[in-house]
Length: 381
Ligand code: NIG
Image (tube, rainbow, N blue to C red; front, side, top):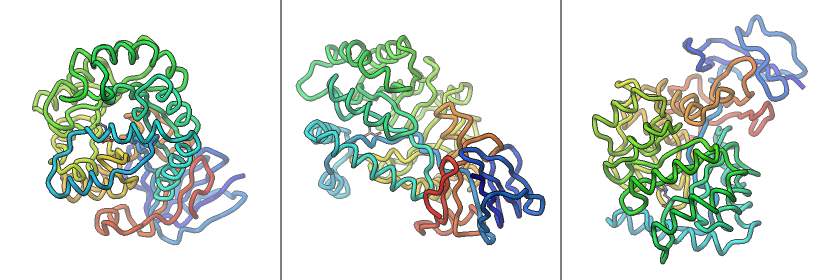
Protein backbone atom coordinates (compact mmCIF):
# COMPACT_ATOMS: atom_id res chain seq x y z
CA UNK A 1 0.00 0.00 0.00
CA UNK A 2 1.56 3.35 -1.05
CA UNK A 3 0.47 6.83 0.02
CA UNK A 4 1.31 10.06 -1.82
CA UNK A 5 1.31 13.09 0.50
CA UNK A 6 1.18 16.43 -1.33
CA UNK A 7 0.65 20.03 -0.33
CA UNK A 8 3.69 20.15 1.99
CA UNK A 9 4.57 23.84 2.28
CA UNK A 10 7.83 23.10 4.11
CA UNK A 11 9.45 19.66 4.42
CA UNK A 12 12.27 19.27 6.97
CA UNK A 13 14.36 16.28 5.88
CA UNK A 14 17.56 16.48 8.01
CA UNK A 15 19.53 15.35 4.97
CA UNK A 16 21.84 18.34 4.90
CA UNK A 17 19.87 20.69 2.66
CA UNK A 18 17.47 23.24 4.02
CA UNK A 19 13.75 22.42 4.02
CA UNK A 20 12.06 21.63 0.70
CA UNK A 21 9.21 23.93 -0.38
CA UNK A 22 6.02 22.76 -2.09
CA UNK A 23 7.11 19.16 -1.62
CA UNK A 24 5.55 15.71 -1.71
CA UNK A 25 6.53 12.31 -0.33
CA UNK A 26 5.47 8.74 -1.03
CA UNK A 27 5.25 6.24 1.81
CA UNK A 28 5.41 2.63 0.63
CA UNK A 29 4.63 0.23 3.42
CA UNK A 30 7.05 1.14 6.22
CA UNK A 31 9.58 3.20 4.19
CA UNK A 32 9.85 6.49 2.34
CA UNK A 33 9.81 5.55 -1.36
CA UNK A 34 9.98 8.98 -3.00
CA UNK A 35 10.64 12.59 -1.90
CA UNK A 36 10.66 15.63 -4.16
CA UNK A 37 8.80 18.57 -5.67
CA UNK A 38 5.02 18.19 -5.66
CA UNK A 39 4.88 18.77 -9.43
CA UNK A 40 7.02 15.68 -10.11
CA UNK A 41 5.31 13.27 -7.73
CA UNK A 42 4.51 9.75 -8.96
CA UNK A 43 1.10 8.11 -8.58
CA UNK A 44 0.30 6.01 -5.49
CA UNK A 45 -2.53 3.86 -4.16
CA UNK A 46 -3.94 6.78 -2.17
CA UNK A 47 -3.28 10.51 -2.05
CA UNK A 48 -3.52 13.00 0.82
CA UNK A 49 -3.28 16.78 0.34
CA UNK A 50 -1.87 18.69 3.32
CA UNK A 51 -2.98 22.04 1.93
CA UNK A 52 0.12 24.06 2.76
CA UNK A 53 1.20 22.55 6.07
CA UNK A 54 4.71 21.79 7.36
CA UNK A 55 5.98 18.21 7.62
CA UNK A 56 9.04 16.89 9.42
CA UNK A 57 10.42 13.58 10.73
CA UNK A 58 8.57 12.16 13.72
CA UNK A 59 10.16 13.06 17.05
CA UNK A 60 12.81 10.66 18.35
CA UNK A 61 12.43 10.67 22.13
CA UNK A 62 15.69 9.04 23.19
CA UNK A 63 15.19 9.25 26.98
CA UNK A 64 12.10 8.17 28.93
CA UNK A 65 11.36 6.09 32.05
CA UNK A 66 7.89 4.75 31.34
CA UNK A 67 7.82 1.32 33.01
CA UNK A 68 6.33 2.50 36.27
CA UNK A 69 3.25 2.55 38.45
CA UNK A 70 1.99 5.13 40.91
CA UNK A 71 1.91 8.86 41.16
CA UNK A 72 4.16 11.54 42.66
CA UNK A 73 1.92 14.59 42.56
CA UNK A 74 2.57 15.28 46.24
CA UNK A 75 6.34 15.31 45.66
CA UNK A 76 5.85 17.72 42.76
CA UNK A 77 3.70 20.00 44.91
CA UNK A 78 6.33 19.98 47.66
CA UNK A 79 8.98 20.85 45.10
CA UNK A 80 6.96 23.75 43.77
CA UNK A 81 6.71 24.92 47.40
CA UNK A 82 10.50 24.96 47.62
CA UNK A 83 11.71 21.46 48.52
CA UNK A 84 14.70 20.52 46.34
CA UNK A 85 14.70 17.50 44.02
CA UNK A 86 17.14 14.87 45.29
CA UNK A 87 16.03 11.79 43.32
CA UNK A 88 14.97 10.04 46.56
CA UNK A 89 11.43 9.81 45.19
CA UNK A 90 12.64 7.07 42.85
CA UNK A 91 12.13 4.71 45.83
CA UNK A 92 8.43 5.67 45.97
CA UNK A 93 8.01 4.62 42.33
CA UNK A 94 10.03 1.45 42.92
CA UNK A 95 7.59 0.40 45.67
CA UNK A 96 4.55 1.13 43.47
CA UNK A 97 6.09 -0.61 40.45
CA UNK A 98 6.97 -3.75 42.39
CA UNK A 99 3.41 -3.89 43.74
CA UNK A 100 1.80 -3.59 40.30
CA UNK A 101 0.76 -6.52 38.11
CA UNK A 102 2.28 -7.08 34.68
CA UNK A 103 -1.00 -5.94 33.13
CA UNK A 104 -1.07 -2.73 35.12
CA UNK A 105 2.48 -1.89 34.07
CA UNK A 106 1.82 -2.75 30.42
CA UNK A 107 -1.37 -0.71 30.27
CA UNK A 108 0.34 2.30 31.85
CA UNK A 109 3.30 1.99 29.47
CA UNK A 110 1.04 1.64 26.41
CA UNK A 111 -1.05 4.63 27.51
CA UNK A 112 2.00 6.88 27.74
CA UNK A 113 3.46 5.65 24.44
CA UNK A 114 0.11 6.29 22.74
CA UNK A 115 0.05 9.78 24.29
CA UNK A 116 3.55 10.43 22.89
CA UNK A 117 2.63 9.13 19.43
CA UNK A 118 -0.43 11.35 19.22
CA UNK A 119 1.96 14.27 19.69
CA UNK A 120 4.31 13.21 16.91
CA UNK A 121 6.79 10.91 18.66
CA UNK A 122 7.43 7.98 16.34
CA UNK A 123 10.56 6.44 17.91
CA UNK A 124 10.79 6.14 21.67
CA UNK A 125 13.39 4.73 24.04
CA UNK A 126 12.40 3.67 27.53
CA UNK A 127 14.21 2.28 30.54
CA UNK A 128 13.93 -0.16 33.36
CA UNK A 129 15.04 1.23 36.71
CA UNK A 130 11.98 1.12 38.94
CA UNK A 131 12.37 -2.59 39.73
CA UNK A 132 15.85 -2.81 41.28
CA UNK A 133 15.73 -6.55 41.92
CA UNK A 134 16.61 -9.28 39.42
CA UNK A 135 12.98 -10.35 38.99
CA UNK A 136 11.56 -6.83 38.83
CA UNK A 137 14.20 -5.51 36.42
CA UNK A 138 13.72 -8.55 34.20
CA UNK A 139 9.97 -7.98 34.19
CA UNK A 140 10.42 -4.30 33.32
CA UNK A 141 12.83 -5.17 30.50
CA UNK A 142 10.42 -7.71 29.02
CA UNK A 143 7.44 -5.37 29.15
CA UNK A 144 9.46 -2.49 27.69
CA UNK A 145 10.80 -4.66 24.86
CA UNK A 146 7.24 -5.53 23.86
CA UNK A 147 6.20 -1.88 23.60
CA UNK A 148 9.08 0.53 22.89
CA UNK A 149 11.47 1.01 19.96
CA UNK A 150 14.57 0.91 22.18
CA UNK A 151 15.09 -0.42 25.71
CA UNK A 152 17.77 0.52 28.24
CA UNK A 153 18.61 -1.41 31.40
CA UNK A 154 18.90 0.99 34.35
CA UNK A 155 19.28 -1.38 37.29
CA UNK A 156 21.89 1.12 38.50
CA UNK A 157 19.27 3.83 39.05
CA UNK A 158 19.42 3.93 42.84
CA UNK A 159 20.66 1.63 45.59
CA UNK A 160 17.39 0.12 46.87
CA UNK A 161 16.48 1.21 50.40
CA UNK A 162 18.18 -1.02 52.95
CA UNK A 163 20.71 -2.51 50.51
CA UNK A 164 24.48 -2.20 50.74
CA UNK A 165 25.76 -0.12 47.80
CA UNK A 166 28.71 -2.32 46.81
CA UNK A 167 26.71 -5.53 47.18
CA UNK A 168 23.99 -4.02 45.04
CA UNK A 169 26.53 -3.07 42.34
CA UNK A 170 27.76 -6.71 42.45
CA UNK A 171 24.17 -7.83 41.81
CA UNK A 172 23.68 -5.36 38.95
CA UNK A 173 26.97 -6.40 37.33
CA UNK A 174 26.24 -10.10 37.77
CA UNK A 175 22.85 -11.80 37.95
CA UNK A 176 20.81 -8.76 36.99
CA UNK A 177 22.73 -8.03 33.80
CA UNK A 178 22.72 -11.73 32.90
CA UNK A 179 18.93 -11.81 33.25
CA UNK A 180 18.07 -8.63 31.35
CA UNK A 181 20.76 -8.59 28.63
CA UNK A 182 18.75 -10.67 26.13
CA UNK A 183 15.90 -8.14 26.28
CA UNK A 184 17.71 -4.80 26.00
CA UNK A 185 20.11 -3.03 23.65
CA UNK A 186 21.48 -0.49 26.13
CA UNK A 187 22.69 -0.18 29.72
CA UNK A 188 22.78 3.01 31.73
CA UNK A 189 23.98 4.16 35.16
CA UNK A 190 22.93 7.16 37.26
CA UNK A 191 26.36 8.59 38.08
CA UNK A 192 25.57 11.25 40.65
CA UNK A 193 26.14 12.07 44.31
CA UNK A 194 23.51 10.03 46.17
CA UNK A 195 23.26 7.42 43.41
CA UNK A 196 26.45 5.74 42.06
CA UNK A 197 29.96 7.14 42.34
CA UNK A 198 32.66 7.07 39.68
CA UNK A 199 34.06 3.62 40.58
CA UNK A 200 30.66 1.99 40.95
CA UNK A 201 29.48 3.55 37.67
CA UNK A 202 32.60 2.36 35.90
CA UNK A 203 32.02 -1.19 37.10
CA UNK A 204 28.48 -1.13 35.71
CA UNK A 205 29.64 0.22 32.35
CA UNK A 206 32.39 -2.39 32.04
CA UNK A 207 30.05 -5.27 32.95
CA UNK A 208 27.45 -4.06 30.45
CA UNK A 209 30.04 -3.73 27.71
CA UNK A 210 31.18 -7.32 28.41
CA UNK A 211 27.57 -8.46 27.72
CA UNK A 212 27.68 -6.62 24.37
CA UNK A 213 25.33 -3.82 25.39
CA UNK A 214 25.64 -0.22 24.19
CA UNK A 215 26.26 2.32 26.93
CA UNK A 216 24.47 5.43 28.15
CA UNK A 217 25.08 7.50 31.29
CA UNK A 218 22.82 9.69 33.45
CA UNK A 219 25.29 12.39 34.38
CA UNK A 220 25.73 15.92 35.67
CA UNK A 221 22.03 16.27 36.56
CA UNK A 222 22.23 17.69 40.08
CA UNK A 223 25.78 19.05 40.08
CA UNK A 224 29.14 18.80 38.37
CA UNK A 225 30.65 15.32 38.51
CA UNK A 226 32.38 12.51 36.63
CA UNK A 227 29.42 11.48 34.42
CA UNK A 228 30.52 13.17 31.20
CA UNK A 229 34.15 12.14 31.53
CA UNK A 230 33.14 8.52 32.19
CA UNK A 231 30.67 8.47 29.31
CA UNK A 232 33.20 9.83 26.84
CA UNK A 233 36.00 7.56 28.03
CA UNK A 234 33.80 4.47 27.72
CA UNK A 235 32.43 5.49 24.31
CA UNK A 236 28.85 5.80 25.56
CA UNK A 237 26.32 6.70 22.87
CA UNK A 238 25.00 9.50 25.06
CA UNK A 239 25.30 11.22 28.38
CA UNK A 240 21.94 12.48 29.49
CA UNK A 241 20.95 15.54 31.54
CA UNK A 242 24.21 17.56 31.18
CA UNK A 243 22.70 20.29 33.33
CA UNK A 244 25.94 21.13 35.19
CA UNK A 245 28.93 21.02 32.85
CA UNK A 246 32.45 22.36 33.20
CA UNK A 247 34.29 23.81 30.21
CA UNK A 248 36.32 20.58 30.17
CA UNK A 249 33.11 18.51 29.94
CA UNK A 250 31.93 20.58 26.98
CA UNK A 251 35.30 20.23 25.24
CA UNK A 252 35.34 16.48 25.88
CA UNK A 253 31.86 16.06 24.42
CA UNK A 254 32.73 18.18 21.40
CA UNK A 255 35.77 16.01 20.71
CA UNK A 256 33.81 12.75 21.06
CA UNK A 257 31.02 10.72 19.46
CA UNK A 258 29.03 10.82 22.69
CA UNK A 259 25.80 12.76 22.24
CA UNK A 260 24.89 15.33 24.89
CA UNK A 261 21.21 14.71 25.59
CA UNK A 262 19.52 17.65 27.26
CA UNK A 263 16.21 17.32 29.10
CA UNK A 264 14.72 20.78 29.55
CA UNK A 265 11.36 19.62 30.89
CA UNK A 266 13.24 17.90 33.73
CA UNK A 267 15.40 20.96 34.40
CA UNK A 268 12.23 23.06 34.69
CA UNK A 269 10.26 20.54 36.74
CA UNK A 270 13.13 20.16 39.21
CA UNK A 271 13.81 23.90 39.25
CA UNK A 272 17.38 23.57 38.04
CA UNK A 273 19.03 25.87 35.57
CA UNK A 274 18.67 24.78 31.95
CA UNK A 275 21.42 22.65 30.41
CA UNK A 276 23.96 24.66 28.38
CA UNK A 277 22.81 23.40 24.99
CA UNK A 278 23.90 26.61 23.23
CA UNK A 279 27.47 26.26 24.51
CA UNK A 280 27.49 22.57 23.55
CA UNK A 281 26.44 23.33 19.98
CA UNK A 282 28.86 26.25 19.71
CA UNK A 283 31.69 23.94 20.80
CA UNK A 284 30.70 21.39 18.14
CA UNK A 285 29.02 18.72 20.28
CA UNK A 286 26.02 16.76 19.00
CA UNK A 287 22.95 17.60 21.07
CA UNK A 288 19.76 15.57 21.45
CA UNK A 289 16.56 16.88 23.03
CA UNK A 290 14.35 14.39 24.90
CA UNK A 291 11.48 14.47 27.39
CA UNK A 292 12.81 12.27 30.22
CA UNK A 293 9.15 11.33 30.72
CA UNK A 294 8.87 9.82 34.22
CA UNK A 295 6.54 10.27 37.19
CA UNK A 296 9.09 12.11 39.35
CA UNK A 297 11.34 14.64 37.70
CA UNK A 298 9.66 15.24 34.32
CA UNK A 299 6.11 14.05 33.80
CA UNK A 300 5.59 15.04 30.19
CA UNK A 301 5.68 13.21 26.86
CA UNK A 302 5.67 16.47 24.89
CA UNK A 303 8.66 16.83 22.59
CA UNK A 304 7.06 20.02 21.23
CA UNK A 305 7.31 21.52 24.72
CA UNK A 306 11.02 20.61 24.81
CA UNK A 307 11.58 22.16 21.38
CA UNK A 308 9.78 25.37 22.33
CA UNK A 309 11.77 25.60 25.58
CA UNK A 310 15.05 24.99 23.75
CA UNK A 311 14.27 27.90 21.44
CA UNK A 312 12.70 30.32 23.91
CA UNK A 313 14.96 29.70 26.89
CA UNK A 314 18.11 27.88 25.79
CA UNK A 315 19.13 29.96 22.82
CA UNK A 316 18.71 27.38 20.05
CA UNK A 317 17.31 28.31 16.66
CA UNK A 318 14.13 26.50 15.67
CA UNK A 319 16.10 24.49 13.11
CA UNK A 320 18.66 23.44 15.75
CA UNK A 321 15.97 22.43 18.23
CA UNK A 322 14.00 20.44 15.65
CA UNK A 323 17.19 18.71 14.53
CA UNK A 324 18.12 17.85 18.13
CA UNK A 325 14.63 16.39 18.72
CA UNK A 326 14.77 14.23 15.59
CA UNK A 327 18.21 13.50 14.09
CA UNK A 328 19.95 14.25 17.42
CA UNK A 329 17.82 11.65 19.19
CA UNK A 330 18.51 9.19 16.39
CA UNK A 331 22.24 9.79 16.82
CA UNK A 332 21.92 9.22 20.58
CA UNK A 333 20.34 5.85 19.75
CA UNK A 334 22.93 5.19 17.01
CA UNK A 335 20.20 4.86 14.38
CA UNK A 336 20.18 6.20 10.85
CA UNK A 337 16.73 4.94 9.85
CA UNK A 338 14.73 7.40 11.98
CA UNK A 339 14.80 11.16 12.52
CA UNK A 340 15.27 11.72 8.80
CA UNK A 341 13.10 11.97 5.68
CA UNK A 342 15.13 10.05 3.11
CA UNK A 343 14.28 7.34 0.60
CA UNK A 344 14.64 4.01 2.38
CA UNK A 345 14.33 5.46 5.90
CA UNK A 346 11.46 4.49 8.18
CA UNK A 347 8.29 6.26 7.05
CA UNK A 348 7.86 8.24 10.28
CA UNK A 349 6.40 11.64 9.48
CA UNK A 350 4.55 14.30 11.43
CA UNK A 351 2.55 17.20 10.03
CA UNK A 352 1.90 20.46 11.84
CA UNK A 353 -1.28 22.46 11.55
CA UNK A 354 0.97 25.37 10.58
CA UNK A 355 2.96 26.39 7.51
CA UNK A 356 6.42 26.11 9.12
CA UNK A 357 8.27 24.55 12.05
CA UNK A 358 8.84 28.07 13.38
CA UNK A 359 5.29 27.85 14.77
CA UNK A 360 6.49 25.25 17.31
CA UNK A 361 8.18 28.10 19.20
CA UNK A 362 6.09 30.99 17.88
CA UNK A 363 2.91 29.34 19.26
CA UNK A 364 4.22 27.53 22.37
CA UNK A 365 1.75 25.30 24.16
CA UNK A 366 -0.62 25.10 21.19
CA UNK A 367 -1.29 21.48 20.11
CA UNK A 368 -0.08 21.76 16.52
CA UNK A 369 0.03 18.04 15.63
CA UNK A 370 -2.17 17.59 12.53
CA UNK A 371 -1.14 14.14 11.29
CA UNK A 372 1.40 11.44 12.20
CA UNK A 373 2.56 8.37 10.29
CA UNK A 374 4.74 5.76 11.98
CA UNK A 375 6.23 2.94 9.91
CA UNK A 376 4.03 4.19 7.07
CA UNK A 377 0.82 3.74 9.04
CA UNK A 378 -1.35 6.61 10.22
CA UNK A 379 -1.30 7.25 13.97
CA UNK A 380 -3.24 10.49 13.64
CA UNK A 381 -4.66 11.81 10.35
O1 NIG B 1 16.27 11.10 34.80
N1 NIG B 1 18.04 10.79 37.23
C1 NIG B 1 17.50 9.81 37.51
N2 NIG B 1 16.38 9.32 37.01
C2 NIG B 1 15.24 10.09 36.61
C3 NIG B 1 14.43 10.45 37.77
C4 NIG B 1 13.39 9.55 38.00
C5 NIG B 1 12.55 9.83 39.20
O2 NIG B 1 12.69 10.82 39.95
O3 NIG B 1 11.69 8.99 39.35
C6 NIG B 1 15.66 11.32 35.86
O4 NIG B 1 15.42 12.43 36.23
